[in-house]
Length: 406
Image (tube, rainbow, N blue to C red; front, side, top):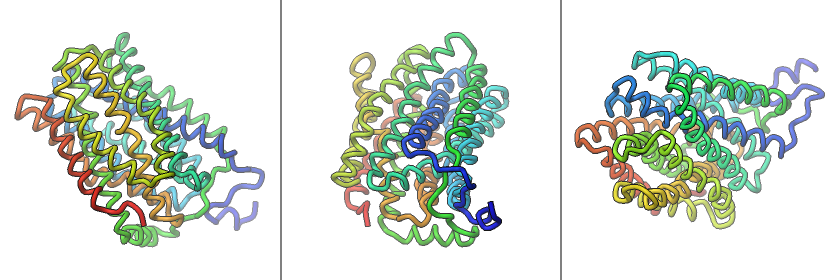
C-alpha cells in the first residue's frame, strides 16, 4: 500500500474489501444488543446495590445522573473521531464494547460511592463511542431506507434491553450483584473478537474534518438549521423522561410493590419485547409518512403511560401499561436519529449522531438526580413518574408546533 492511501482518511488497505451490507448490519445490530444488555442489566442490579450499600434515593439518582453525563459528554469526542478517522471504525467499535465490559467488571469490584460513580460514568463514556460509527455506517449503506435500517439497529438494542434484565435477574438468583457485574466482561470480549473478524474494511464515505477547529465549524454549520435545534430539544425531552423512569421503575417495583429481582426484570423485559415488535414498523412508517407523524404520537403515549404507572397498581394492568410504554418509548431514538441525518446531510454524519446523543446530557443529566430528591422529599417514589410525564407532555407540545425537517 502506498503512502497516499496510508495518510488519507477513508482509505482501505489493498485486499480488504468492505463487509457485505447484510453482514455489517447483522454484526452492528448484534453489537448494539450486547451494549444494551449491559445498560438494562445495570438497572436490575441497581436496587441490590442500593440495598447492600445503604444508599438513599438521592444517591441512586446522583449515580444515574453521572452515568447520563458520561454518556452525553462522551458523544462529542466520539463524533469527531468517527468522522475524522472513518477508516478505523472497526477499531473504535471493538474498543468501545470491550471498554464497557471492563468498566462493568471494575464497577463490581469497588465499594466507595464515588468510585462507583466513576466506573459507571466511564462505562457510559465507552458506550457513547458505539453509536457514531455504527449508525453512520448503516445510514450511508442504506441511505434510501434510513428509517427502517436504523430501526432494525434499534431493534437489536431492544433485544438487548429485553435480555439484559432477565439475564441479570436470573444471575442474581445465584450470585451477588458484584459477580453479576463482573461477568459482563465475557460477552464484551466475545463481541470484540467478532467485530475484529467480520468488519475488516469497514469505512465511511467521508474522512470528515481535518482538524478539531474545522470539526467545530461543521458543528456550528449543523446547528444553524432550525429543524436540527428542534430535533435536539425533542431528543433531550423524551430522554429526560426516559432516564428518570429507567432509574426508578425497578426501585418502585422492588420496594413499593414488593416484586422479586426476577419479577422486576420480567416487567422490564416485556416492555422491551413490545419495542422489538414496534420498532421496525415505526421506522417503515416514518420513511413513508414522515418522521414527525411517528415522533409526536409516540412522545404523547410515553407521557400517558408513565403517568398511569402509579394508578395501575400491579398485576395485569401494570403489565399492560409497561408494555404499551415500551412499544412507543424505545423506538423513538432511531426515528429522531433518522430525522437528524435527513436534515444534516452527508458531510459530518457521525458528528450529527453525536450531537443527538449529546443532547441527552444538556437536558437529561440532572433528571434522575432531581427525581431522587423529589422521591426523598415526598417519601413517594411514584412522584418521579408524574415528573417524567410532565416532561413528556411539554416535549410533545414543543414538537407539535415546530418542524422536524428541512
